[in-house]
Length: 308
Image (cartoon, rainbow, N blue to C red; front, side, top):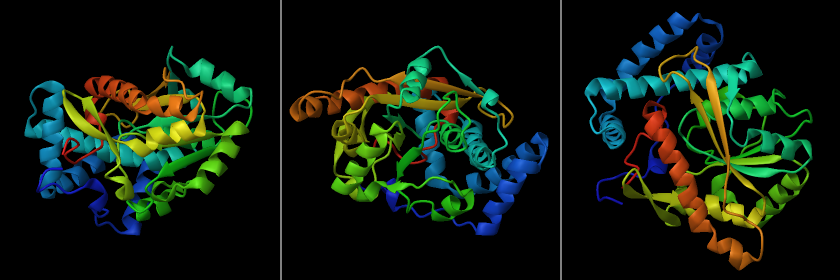
């Protein structure tokens, strides 16, 4: 890590009061689209003006994707993030219909059949787009699967505690920093009965920052979390890479495209055979992540030096 870089997990939640988040939730669920966009632009302007390091990280990332990036491009990047925050509240309000999520000609049908048959899986998502569309739809029973199944998200719960409280997700998040034998046994049991675990594969958690896999991403080696891909090895279930992306980067009313890709790496066989697949699984995920980043760079929400 670069000498002056701050690990993303050491950054504090941006100072904001609970009432401000609740107001954001109210706006997302009840205001007309043009007012949502207007408020988002005003709020974004304030944070954009005060967050120098995040602006620099934004421009650096956009340059990697587009070859160049202006200050206006970086502002649009911030604005896209503001809209995604509103979307989170909107998703968990129960208002969105399943018809607002457009499936693709990928591995969605295979995934649905697997879940219909009562077989679980591990999904690896990212901070590209807004996975809350999938998470909330599954939790609220709005899916293409007839049977009810549960989502078990795995995340660093200490990063945005106020936001997590206001979102009021009706699922229990498993703390990524405390995954041990008991948690893996619990997840194995839940997945064996047709449920789903989901974890982001593009951030190293606070307690595992030294356990990483170097993978080429956008032309330069980046550190990906070994624990995420080792979890796939331990669970011994099929892995799917999931991306939920707005059709229009800066449109709150834009539909969402859900992309589902089954990993080619098989997590079957002996422990040593599965362990050998961990770096390959990370590389496969990074390739999909890179592909969608190049298509939708404005929906990348890692505002720090990803390659440090």
